[in-house]
Length: 343
Image (cartoon, rainbow, N blue to C red; front, side, top):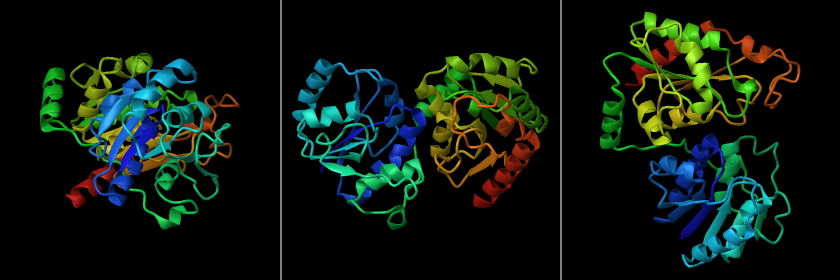
């Protein structure tokens, strides 16, 4: 069985898609799973044992570029895939499998995909309530419900050599317990817990004799700089915007605990088996939770959440302000005790 997956465009969604890959490997004897996804995704796909090959999608999100799609489809046609599973819901994402003449093309009904997909599913959002269910459900026949299958948790696997190399490169001392803080979120401010609260969490961990490491993209550099200004470089290391995605994955694999917003790094940390405390504001903790038994979700009971908006419609961000640092520190202590018992 040769399967082409048209992958999603967000880090967190790509990590959750591994649950589908794992399911396909369980269903079929040694399937070849290739994933067509943006170039940035390669470091994530490379640490998914189920993936045979990552194929770079040369077209940006939202762009048509029909000529380029036809050229790519011709190359994929030569690979003679048996099945294509299209995870995004756009018309454009379904074009390449159709142009490549892949015989079975599966996906949820989206924008004008009739004909492009010949195994078209109608999504009942009240039944498939989580993103991971919507991905894994495509591995099964029509009519299969989430109660009929189990969604395995993603599990990223790194080599010892890669980890050792990155740890040496960045001079990380693992003799102290490491707390990772991930204060960014590409989605928008409605996902971002206040900076001063992250500072309190950092102070809490440092007081317990630990080291704090900050992670994020170049867009998160300013917020991370605001957090570290209260501490010495021996206490807090700021890696925001200074690491590749491959390096971030390796570094996160060695931390002891993670405090994070609802973000791609949250999903990576959970898939690495790190104890994660995730703060949810405007987004739903039911739709895209961290997929790990070593995770704790903290959110407020504000009436207006989850609004699923990028910015607060009312401008007050109460859903984030009302999640206090004490709730997070209590969850960290609980996870420490839970991890010790598990070991």
